[in-house]
Image (cartoon, rainbow, N blue to C red):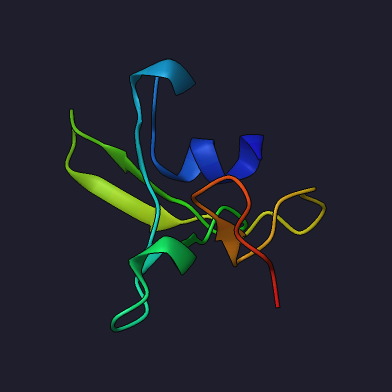
Length: 72
């Protein structure tokens, strides 16, 4: 969201670094998921960051990383 990007004082949203949390279940790495509903955005220029919660995202907080993996 643009208001979140404004908080990071980014001149260009493309300059932000985007990270996501990955969950790897013990002994079942094929069932790994990523939290795409709340990525972490970092402005490397001023060294600020924020977890951005995407309320109307089509992505889940438990998106499978591998094809064929089943969401629970």
